[in-house]
Image 1: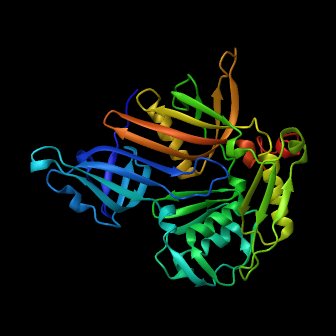
Image 2: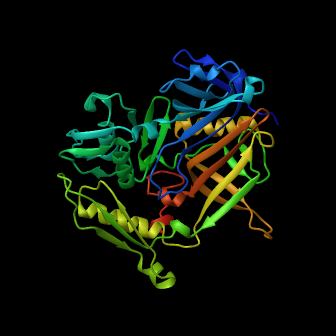
Image 3: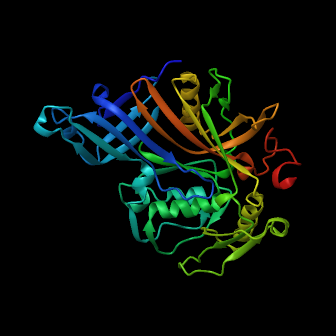
Length: 379
């Protein structure tokens, strides 16, 4: 296998500083289906013998790019940590920390903003853009049309990221930071399948052979009594609504969970609460953390996998694993939630976080995976 030959660029002109890089690491997305998005960051450690770090001013655009041209990370500089060798005779370094667009959206606070009218979740998210706010905010673009309606806000006071999280809590889709903006994926787009899969042994251009797999059940994914809080257009809190998976409660006891949404009606909010109580109501349900690296896996497969997520929004994939001691493999349809990465010359390591696909499995007519009547909630 061959390690990726990363290219590191800074500034609007894309000045190459690859030869100065010692190591890098970062994260994007989230780990868990029920988590809010907090945004991602990445760090690049460079040689700083001649004060090269002076080139990295706050707000400067920085990219980590596959040699084939797709970004694994894009962000803007928020700070530099210097490690100076005493006497200026050894190896001095600087670590550049950058934020992605979701993190940046959390730093824009809207004051008495009247632009959030009642409409689909994805359409309302686009009202966060400069054309409506007048601020140089990260531009939000929708992928698909939201399947839920968001409540109007007469005057909104809060961060853009907080509103996007409320909208996504309502929609149950995903937020994806991109170069210069944010994508809001409707839940109907969450089961578009990546042609690259993950396998415990098979390595090819369409299969990533992983080095370690962690299966995690229960914990914060097990919820069978769910309450959803929401507000009217004036921001007044309305009485919360509830969803109860009584079958799970009888068998496993009560596991409660409360969250806030942007739902516009009690009917819609109640449906959401019920949906969560049933999709999260089995304590044996597994989520997955998958480790792999380009020293052992097929690097083309890794590139294809990440490019398909970033460029074509193919979040769903197939994970093949084996229970210890079993004689055959288990295959699970999963959905990407987020990932972390770190690299040094000769090796890049990744950890990807996945939820089971049925967390997102709404019925979609004519779909080969989501149009089958005896699956998920329809079963």
